[in-house]
Length: 525
Image (cartoon, rainbow, N blue to C red; front, top):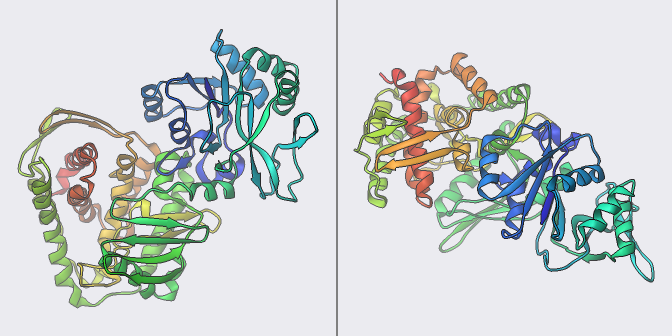
């Protein structure tokens, strides 16, 4: 049996970054931390996740836990770890299994689940109040704290007990979890086992440092992350060059919105560049996994607006207008042609979404293109080109965004920091209103009924709903929703071939494009 203890909320410093969530629900690698924790566990054993009794479990998490046979036990968040374990064990009823415990803010790789009566330890030089160890000639003792002024071995968060009866008696007769460990060890000796692959997510800076060890990247990119630098590589050399040149060509006044960029390397079959690694969360993680209040999101969107306002001060050459118009008009149909050639999806087939008949992807793309006016000189200024949530980091300390992974090009030959600024705004729409990041995280419900019939739902998110309404009602960034919505819908259609690695995700993106068309078709004249 494995119990992941997450019955309290994260610390105040993490609440400021993610809202009031249990530690096992922190975002890590576009998943919840608990998904990584249980992935490393034995699926054949009984697995339990404890949660605060005043935490509302999101529907997606409920379904994921049910699917993977994870039991949820709700406990008072006001109880200590010792008290909550006593109550948890009593709620589990009579059982004779061995019991393992993993702290909810901890991930440890390489655990030997065959070992009995152990306490994991690891080395740290972080100045926090850790539980420590001391050794006598006969046994290891566990202490409430070690001298954090010097590096040392600390209790790292995994425990295994061969006797549930002795564990329960030890917890009931002790005044803390650590003292209960010593009490247990007086009967059945607990061995301290060093697991160096320890990732702690319980504090802000250990969270970001640990998260950097678990990365996500698409199939066409390769990321090599060191403590200070990210090296981004790709066989698409032109794309790496375009991104690098975009960063290097920015005016100094805009460089406050980006990490530092260091070097570019061209090889025979690939290219790479190095960029500063920033210990910040991307907005897609905050949108999907956090519980930030509306006021926090208001400030985040204000910072996005500040970048766009500053970028508009740097207008591009009018000569780009024809190339921009041609690029965007042709792009969606080129992508649909690729989709036809690389999949079984027919862009000319009509669809049924949630029981309602809707036009084909080609037809919707044509309507959206027809509703999108030609670019004007006022629209051409420094543009990120892919301003979606996953490419926007947020620094809560200075309340400002930092941007990564720009486009920097119209095609494989035309490298430019300028573009149609409406597409940056449409990318924000596609994250806020289009909920692209929820689809990428697998947070949706999809039923494929037939070749062209789908039932599709995406989670309700009151805060993002409100932000989306404000974007559309307040002529956000100087543009009416009628100018941005068609571009946003076509973004979802044009990205379909880029997700050929997952047919389910492709269909979900189609369903979402259909959903958006259905909701906003009156805007498409």
